[in-house]
Length: 309
Image (tube, rainbow, N blue to C red):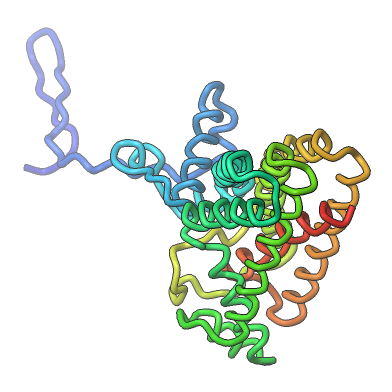
């Protein structure tokens, strides 16, 4: 039977029938955040999907089953979810703060008790994230410390094995983090130190957003050894990240005061500027590993600024 319109005349009425055609599967509409923002009541749920997607990729918290199907995934969605990285910091930092506060109260503020509390909260946050950012720090140190050539540095960073530069950087970073957290527990008490830890996890995750906005993505996604990463952040995503970060600034203000907040923020900015300069000069862009390294060094910069203030 040929397709088209068939006419059948009757004595009083002319009937139109449409020939049977196979039903085509409807195409999924293209991802368009701007369109969804125009629909009242849709954008908040859309932002929740982005947050859960970021939580799924950067923590061990399970987002599975029907919830994962509702959240969905696409490279464009992951880029849009990058603005919620500081929101993930509230979850990871919240777990670490609870462990630091509880262990600090139980063990006391003596030097060894504070050090054990710092070690326990560091272990908790590293387990919750799968040591994702620490791995990025080690790979970045191997790549940038082991070769002056851009292409060779990128190849080294994709190698799953850890070298001498990565080992030294990772050990020194962990030792410095433990020492600074123990010092904060001794100086400010477990409660205030827990608030500062929470704020540092949030604010340090805002730093990679600045790197993503200022530099291009240079790694090849098809050759990446790890799970996919966001490759860009929009101006709206950067604004979302700063909205997540403002309450963390208020926490530091509450725990330490305005002058200490300014000192810690200055250390954060100096380290972030140094990372931007290094990545622009050596790689002409950023990779997923360098984003993890940026988060780690900026977290240490905040602890150091608060300790020195």
